[in-house]
Length: 230
Image 1 (cartoon, rainbow, N blue to C red):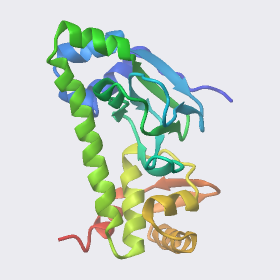
Image 2 (image 1 turned 30 degrees about the vertical axis):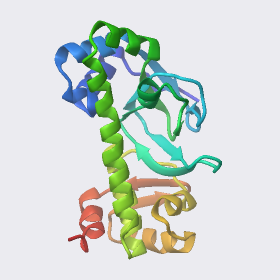
Image 3 (image 1 turned 135 degrees about the vertical axis):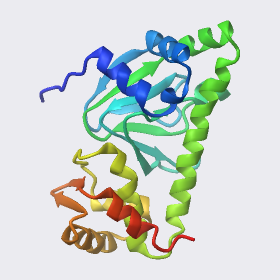
């Protein structure tokens, strides 16, 4: 498999302009990026698993990741998909506990990784940076609130549209998501997903091929998904 290369300066620009890091001061951005390493993951490759040892934070430069989690003693299940600008892994820094989610590359993905010891060094030099890192968890909470809200929709078609619309930040990238995986995120059966996908395709909102989905009109999906919201 050929590898898509991304230059370091281009990767840093993406993270400065999208997601959590874009809201931080220029000096803090530079310090995070100076201490980080650029990593490459192939489709399906595990970045970390539930229960893994302490580690640092990851920011998506390009590609997409699957976010899998579950309560203790249950198998992790797919709950969301992260795209460029998405950061996660802050739990180890905040709690000194092991990983609580599983992160897996959905497609070929480039990530910026800031090791935990580098985070600790930054916090030792300036305790206020702990607040900067703590903001990542609020982004995760916002995403979780969105997931819960979408799952509370009564109409399965609107739940499915909500799940698909959440992947829109990935852009025109084709996602190798199965109907079963979409059903898991949308609390819908495979039959319901299949029927909804056919309707959405006929409307021109997306296109599908074998194990692949491309969002063509995220705004139409959003309008349909939120039609019953108050």
